[in-house]
View 1 (cartoon, rainbow, N blue to C red):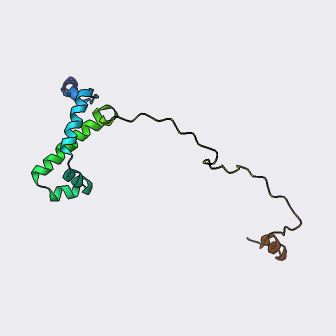
View 2: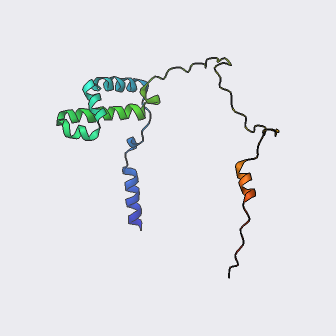
View 3: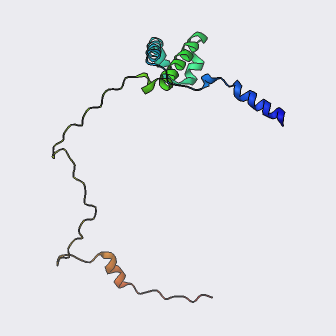
Length: 140
């Protein structure tokens, strides 16, 4: 039992502390962003758009390594830089709209139509008046 505890403690302390992905500082993010921009060429974008299966079968090992490098940098930018490494534009105040631009909402519970002399009973009611009730069958 003591031996198992020793193994568990050894395994837990052997885990590298760098496994925790803390956010990077702004300078590192800027450097990663510039590296990403260097790696992302038209050919790289076209290859990425075609998908991983196409990349595996059509690119030589050197180009594959460039794709791997780009994806590693992209991963760091996306997950370790705050806001994905991209400066987000400031939110704009919503523009004021006129009443002509607003679509009116329907009534939730409209008033029932009023009965008039011109109104005829529905056809289903008229048909049900003509049919005789069915005879119940005795079941045993």
